[in-house]
Image (cartoon, rainbow, N blue to C red; front, side):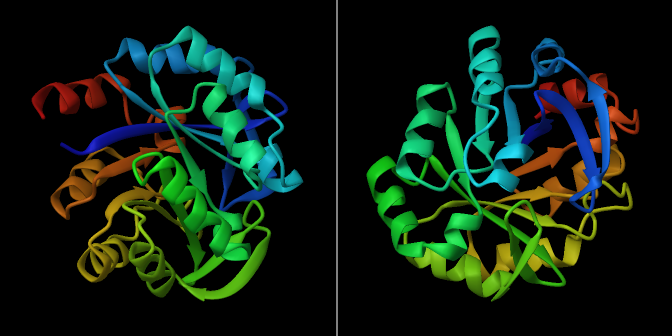
Length: 241
């Protein structure tokens, strides 16, 4: 069964969305992320992708309280990312209620540390964030580009124990123009990781397409907030799985 994973991105404690990761395109959808999370749960959703965009930019956790409050007020299984640079940050995320954490920038900057964290916490608790633009991994809230090619990057982490990968094609993110099907098919074929597709979902048909190609999960953001996908459509998909 493919996981349906709505996204809540946080800036200054508020639920926002960006386009292509550009902070200047910020649009606030709700002042209270807990309210949003509770609504997801009301429609049978079990998983949540929570991103601390302030943390990603600042390179340390900023919106820890939002994580704590959502974990306290719902039973959603939260994967949390943004600003996780040290073991102290990772411990803080788990202690605040994250079921899983996503390593992004640090996975490029300090792979040895990340391999150690995968061994310490186990591959079910650590997700690799492989966010790319033109197939090159980007870091620090997508503000910095590396020279690492996305499939090679994932293959290397697979050899070092990673099982779950979130891949966002940044050029598609927040654009409601459809996901990068060909890239996701290639990643699944060449790496055999459990791929969670992110970016570009524009309607319920895209969600079914991600299921058909073998994704382990699909993250949905702006399509929900802009009403392109209704929560009752997702509820029906979950119930029929």
